[in-house]
Length: 114
Image (cartoon, rainbow, N blue to C red; front, side):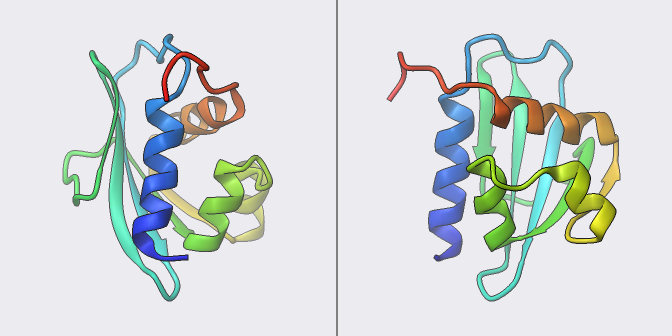
């Protein structure tokens, strides 16, 4: 799977998230490792979630994950806490913001947006 497909899956998952985003602002930089490496960020804004393929220098947290593990995470097949303990992923910055991402992924997607 290409970087662009992984990015698109992430963008779709967060832009179709339930209408009640966390009140706390966060911006999580995602660094993908592996053959299709790349970067993007997920930010909680007043308009909802923004996912963009840029290096966001003012991020509040940083998650480094393989592209394959990102797909597993988005599909609910990878628990970030266990992946962190096993060394499959690494984080820096505010770990609560990484946990917020996990909570959003675990929540059902909104049916009203396509």
